[in-house]
Length: 623
Image (tube, rainbow, N blue to C red; front, side, top):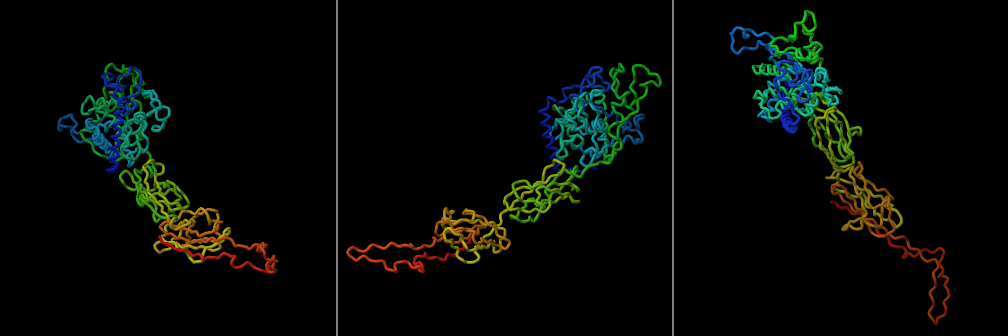
């Protein structure tokens, strides 16, 4: 049975229909309604309103007037009045029930399209049986229902090149994107849209993010909207005929579609996908050489035959054995009766990629995350899809990396449909960023994960040891400084500590003179080691050339703060080696120099000439 795509995808399909309806209103000037039905060529397979011998242009029709299947419904359908001779009473032959069967996924697509279009264009009165009639004539119900679980045909259904030889002449409009032909357009998919029509009317009815003419859900909804263009009311016979003729401008096509429409209205049943009846006779295979007649073959219009296809009468009785007396062998080109097994990748089955776990991830700098992003690949019915390659990418300014230092990695979904990225490790940079997961080779919406990295914290900084830090101007501090960091009583390795030389605790602005670090700056950062401490080695601080008292202020994220006193003294004083004697008082004998006035080579400066040295101490402060 066809998969139930689910409420979420049905809402998406309806939204697509709303958008398409708006597009239809804007594109009314290009709608096929410009071609009105007429009464000429009532019996031949010629475009209504065309001149003799002129192939149809194809403009203004959904299919470009491409060939179609001409087989009619069986005549042995259940009669309305049983028991009347000649009305088909009695047991039904196999062809009756088989022809009334519609493959499950195809039938689901027709009914869903009817529901969607009726919700946006209720005045159109679109019946799903009309879509079934067109689908039968155009592709034999998607080649007998040979579609995958998402409703996409196993291989593209393509009409012949519309090169003007027996068909419309339509040059390529899609660069071969849909039909693989860069010279001429071809009708594509189970509802046989030409690329230029699909560009306007294409739909994404199954919510897989693509407008695919080879998908029966997309194509059926597009056909429904196309038939309802220009405010048609399909409950009215005139509007119904106009709608069908807008699809293919042939009265024989009109009669064939109406025959199947009425047949399906009398009753259908569901058959498994891939088991539908494959039609054989096509409108381009009924004449010798496969070309349409260029002149009328009879003065009386020919109506579609209610029985098996027979050769069209000529203008005169042919001789036995001459060309034209028998129908040439039918060589169907599409669809292939026995298709090869489908070759689809697991990614083609995915309808959505969702977050399966760890939508939000957080850790501290320079550490591993405790979890990793996990994404789930789901098909249209919400079931997991295994073997899908999922790409995880780190997006944003961060030095966080996957294992191996990578920013982009690929993981494969397990049997449960889950893909998990490799281990994730934060770097030294704090901040927020995103990890984005996507299906490789698809354009589905991404699954996104919010990631944050916070700084390591310490609420307490203390000095280890109490040796005073002092130095004379122009020298370096010869003492070592060691600091321990803790957070909530536990060692706090990896914390970044900021160190500043300031002049005061009460106004801790950076000092403009006095001590500096070795690089001549008065600000530096240090990282707490694995043992919870950092050490400023001897000589790491320079005293500068200004004596005085200073402070080394240390701060850490989390509130830890420490002030350490720095003492800078002036350089030592030295006596004058040649003192000048003071003059004597007037009236007194001139004094002669005393031998003791000359400095002795062995004399040393007086202790009073040396400046006193103070002992600095460190202070500890908790935030």
